[in-house]
Image 1 (cartoon, rainbow, N blue to C red):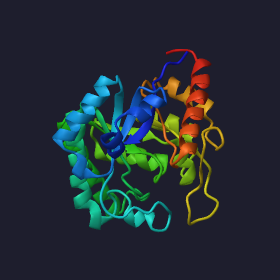
Image 2 (image 1 turned 135 degrees about the horizontal axis):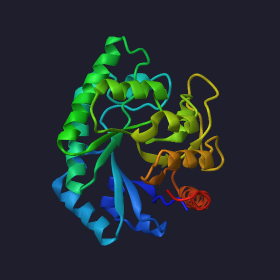
Image 3 (image 1 turned 135 degrees about the vertical axis):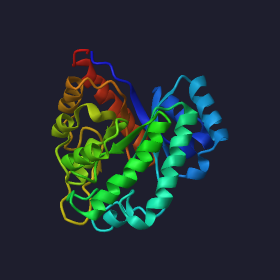
Length: 279
């Protein structure tokens, strides 16, 4: 059996307010912590969260770091609002990501993850070169702390992400593979992308979805097993590339249905892993 930890993404704010009972209720012992409010990246909160995780034997796979300012998740306003690509938001977002890196270090976490935005496809443009420089600055800051900087997939094609990593030229860059995002943004086949990303994959979101059906809105997210991600093939490909990280379930809805879908995804993953030989 291919043994991988199965976890869930959970917000830092929720953990600070309610503790880790939600993770325990799912019978999971791994999480990706998601922090969008940089004012919560304090030493006091780091001690509190680290203590809760250690007391309950829960591992944080990575810290997903958000950034201030507008965030519109579509094809029209997304390029001008998301990540480090839009010029007018870069400085404040750089500061937020570096503060998140400091917080991850305090937590004893090895990786931070974020969306960098719609990386330009044309590498000859000034916008692309500036984007590379700004990401390099943040990634070098992470490197000095002994951390990996991970790109969550979705807004760029796989080859553009590979080119960006190569052009940045640091050895602490990784990829958080979100297979549903590749579909929902119409950027690629997630199973094939595993072969392109290879050893850069340091994290995986277990999320399912569909290709977009028009040029304005993203494709729809679905429960795992009801979209177009072929998880048996994807996980077998991860094994071929010696992936040893966690499988982090993400279901971007709220209410009782979210918990039901997470538990269903967990069972699907356990069944798939059972049928794959160990490394």
